[in-house]
Length: 280
Image (cartoon, rainbow, N blue to C red; front, side):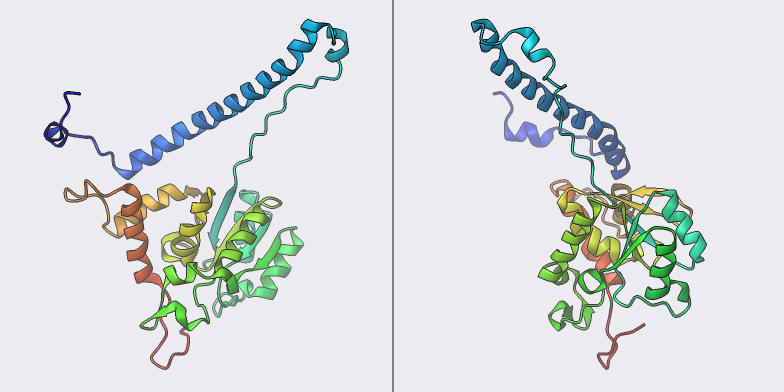
């Protein structure tokens, strides 16, 4: 009751850097997951008790009648949905497949608009699909839905692809839905060309929208290491110089990262040449 507006404004607050927020989130998220599982389990046990206890007290049931049929209460723990991303870069096909196998990938979703590579023909659509099939990895082309070069002219502003408009298309949303549904059966990796996640629309466009569906995203880096998407966003804030300053104290973390996405999209989004034809 004694706290007034002036006192609130005078108080200082600690604003941790993104790396600390990421580390904290990584630490506490499993604890909250366990807590939610425990709450659900307690709820089911309570319902079982409330169902059986009155019948036991009334003599309608006896313990021998129920000991055998009762199974251990099953807890529906939703398996965390994880989507991976990878850039084929200039890897050999053997190296690329070894990266996929290292992380247990069983399906590749190709999000290139044009699934061909002039300098790395081993990643041409047909060749890649055949190579993956040999090692038991499924391949699907989603460049039409999730690619960076839409044919729809309304997705361009002054000759540059607009990621916000692209994400609003029903076709794009269907592509995300296919990825989510595919992840129920496969361990999916979104594939594009760029080795650096922050240089590619798979991160700045696709993952930006995919994360709103409560998906955990991990990026497979060229050396085989994994980078959690939250760490990627921490790097995004730095390279776009969108880290919180003294005049941004009232700006939410969500707004800060959205600023960074918009700024980065302007740097990497596909641009048409003067004749309106697509660049390579």
